[in-house]
Image (tube, rainbow, N blue to C red; front, side, top):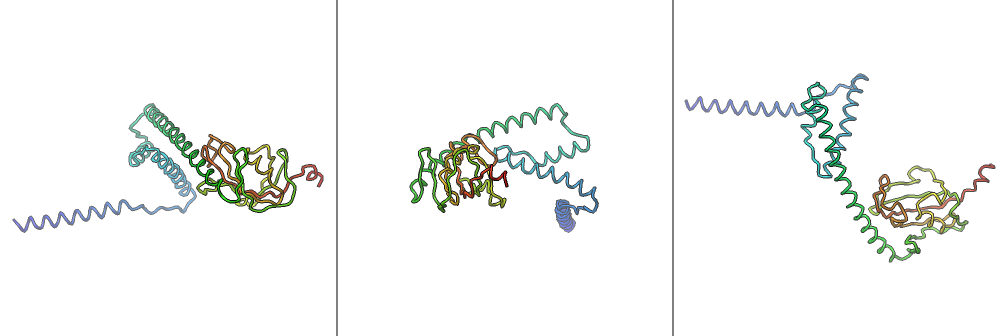
Length: 250
């Protein structure tokens, strides 16, 4: 009897180990065949949806909304099989509620981030103003001469050609003509006021570093990768004042 019990325990252990190994094997991604264009297209659709969902879920998690990925995948599979367990009206209802909740949380976060950016900007400006070589204008614009040119100075209505790099206070680069390997041209009265004021201080051939308070940049607006109330740092090289009449005559 004891021997039978012992053998049964051994058998149970073997069966359990086998089941664990099978489960581990099942969890391994199956080999994918992507030999034909149709196979690649099918996989591409799935990968595209997955990439979008991965980012979307990460964004929601950052806001404190963490969704069950297993249920998400189950809903996806059930819908593909035509066997969704929620009808269309209910799906619209719950997703509308989710969207409303996320938007509310985003608004709160944006407001908190804007206040934080404003405080950090003011602190940075106060510290930067004390540095040797930094000049502060009446408007609050701060600039430092990196290279002094001897060409003409532009006016607010002039079109200029410049090379520049723009960063946030943490060093994140959000724009650069150097990265595009192509100078930018624009009228000085058609850009942020920090640029309009600052570039007029420069002689052609100069390179300046500008620290621009948020109120002289984009203020409380979120512009692409530039958060609201961001103090911006630009390195600007004034290449030329564009003479439109002369350029048209060439």
